[in-house]
Length: 329
Image (cartoon, rainbow, N blue to C red):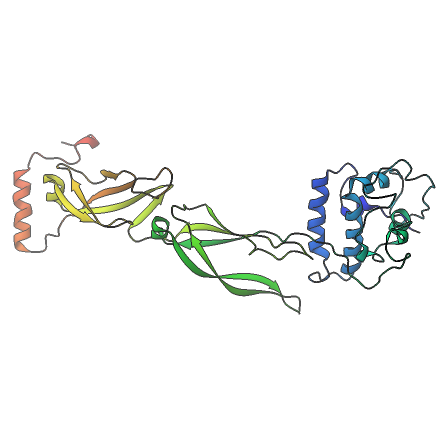
């Protein structure tokens, strides 16, 4: 009978913590599960992995196994010493180790010798061993992520959307091919770029009876022809005529939550920001909305327009827009 080094099989150190063992099992079980693995010895490795995990995840079995010492090597000829499990407490009635009885016969002789002595008298039908059944090992599925783009307006009001996602899958020929599927999801009001929408149970399927993972939609905003977003604030360039900027005016302008009246203060210049408090992205602390003034000069494409600009030049002869640059006459 060959010795089984369960720590080597799991790829963990003898001093590994339970969480380390669990993580190693999840990773390797996905790699070698016969339903998905392309490894030639996947089923044998999967059974071996499950056996190792059954021992190392159980504090009692692990403690008993550790009594054998660290000098044994994988594959070495082995006979357990008679006193190997003396003094080890085990949960359950009597002196029997606890198992899923449906897994009987799926373990190595090493495991059977150490842990199944007396198993038949514990209610398995006089030692009868079932055969041909795959171990009931389970592991949760992996979480998956997908980047999506949503309209800015969806964050203001919330929405229900349906999108198509491509999922890479392995074909029967061993090639990775994309499979498209549609999902419908709710966009929560106030969501911001960089946040996630979690769709429970829509990630990768679990192994065995393991629950599927979750799907996380990583949110970005689509480029908008009017608005731009900076964290929770929203900005829009607002074109104004020179006389509106100079004399002041009230104009109507759009926002993601509807049209509003904007008061342009007299003497405004290009780049001036007019704030609408709390009209940015919704939230517990909502952002602000900013109009950024952009003065638009009419074209001098008619004789009357040219004459008007000439009169302005004469009227504002002392005005020098570059005076602050220095070195100007």
